[in-house]
Image (cartoon, rainbow, N blue to C red):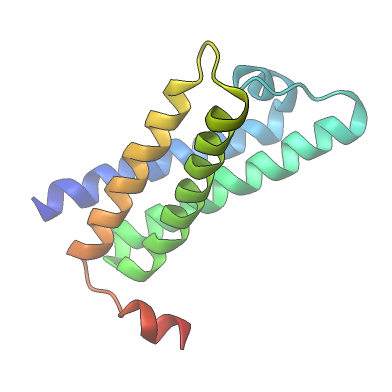
Length: 132
């Protein structure tokens, strides 16, 4: 079970890393696929920088955590996906949803769950040790 979980985290990490790299070379196309338009140089720089950073950091942390069997590193992408999911829940509660709204939420919820399970199953420090 643990080996399968680590394998899933590694594959998901590769996917997220590739997604992050995709934002570097095609910010307009990738932004549009997520419903974000990059208007002007500032828009393109924001999509390129912010989305590439988000997915690249997630991907690298997932790969490192899976490869080294280090649960501590898996908390970083779990936190990022958890915050992104909460942001979508807040949006749904305040302004409603639209077409294509649920798919990214499922993507984030599944990966968040996968990462928390991975964190629990591989060696890690207690959260208090990391924050204290």
